[in-house]
Amino acid sequence: MKLPPNDAGQIKIAIATGNGVGATDHFGYALQFQIWDMSGPQARLLETRRNTPACGADRSEQRRDPLDVSVDLVADCRAVVVAKIGECGINRLNALGILVFETDDTVDAVVRELTGSTLLHGRHAA
Image (tube, rainbow, N blue to C red):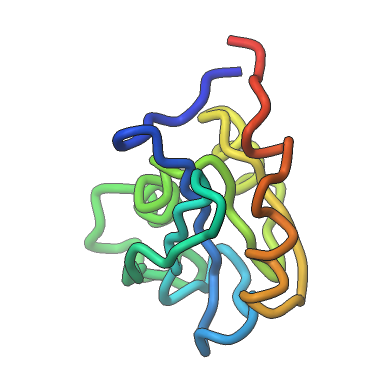
């Protein structure tokens, strides 16, 4: 499995959160993703990326699949944390080497759980 690219050794995760407090959003409906750097001893919030939700999007004038837009938005992350995600989203993210986690935990709990996780820091087969 190919790992997503990183910036200066960063290990990034994307958390779909509509309220900034919990992992509240379905991948296809997410309006934003918090991007966290998990590479150091303490996680740090890097940015919030605005998203155009894939589910329910008007496809009549779009040239790209709306799901591709969401996938591209988090393509530099090692993992994506969402409340829910469909099989198509999982398959597209996994094909890029991106792990997917479903939870209804708070952002703080997710970050605490994944800080130092061997899932993020371990090596995947190329």
